[in-house]
Length: 190
Image 1 (cartoon, rainbow, N blue to C red):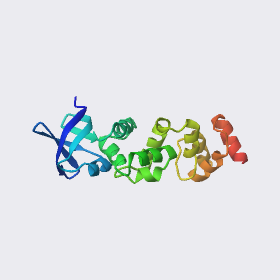
Image 2: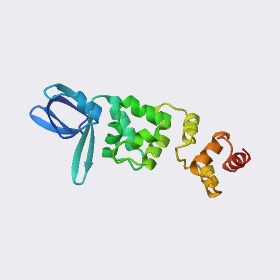
Image 3: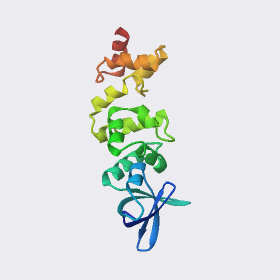
Image 4: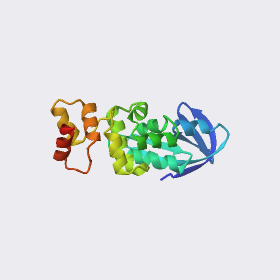
């Protein structure tokens, strides 16, 4: 298993950085921030994630362990593969991506190539606790207008004729610790 490459940037081919180590050039896929940081001829230490499949062997590289860690967290989200995780990391700096996840900024995450609303929402839901928000704060973010929630109470209100935004607004004022049935009753009273 390759965990790091320590060598020289010999070329940039499209979206791949070639890191030459003792005469062997390794093609490494990198997020935009890292790709732009490395210049041809510069020494480079790259943290590597290997993705091996039946018909391919891809290397994904990062200049910091923080970026690699976020990449691996993104891979744990259902529906996110290595290319999509790389696209998510390429829409801004690592701190911007973490901030978007923490604040529930689905629109920002959707701006990544190949990322739809459902995947962006799933990223927020799955990683909200892992990037620094408490689950209560994240739940409040997910019930705000503009984000679709898989909450049973939202779904129930929608079957009663509420739009997703109206259902989320009605439930935003209701205590999330109540049972689903009680939350629906409180939202209907409000």
